[in-house]
Image (cartoon, rainbow, N blue to C red; front, side, top):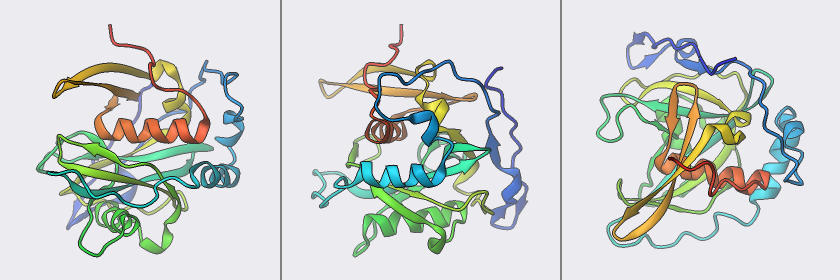
Length: 246
């Protein structure tokens, strides 16, 4: 079965779109990937939401500690990586950016933005998620945090916060910022057939760039790095050096 999916652009009703018409659902497919190389029972965890949440908390304990002052020229920002149980399995909620945002038009991202003065990364990630896709702060359960990522192109030092929400959820998308929400099954992201890497050089420093195929979309850049860090930390798999571009 292919990775085709159904996509319906949301209708514009004032500021927000209809929550049921702007979510991309990937159909269930049978993955040939196996996880013999890891001690984590990944297939089992992906179908047991309570066990997965407990496992994520344990795996991320001690990560995302004290914030470092950002390098010169970078601002502090935070994103929320949301784990949900959709169509019988674990998935991440990603956003497809609108064509009217200032940066990264049409790209796949995580809800988030700059940290305001006096605000914690967790508070910033939750606030931005509420603004972008209408998830209420009280409905978000934080499971932990990942290590900071530098996004020199965008000019941010990024703190990824990991959380979950009850799902399905009545999402209310802000059309100025988000065109659609994508349910990306963790099974798909963990399958080596759906990830490739390239070595890019910036400022004389080589860096591995991750590209994840999710349906017809490609997830890369800072979002790809955050997802890679999450998968490696939680599932004890090695994404680095995955299938190279030819």
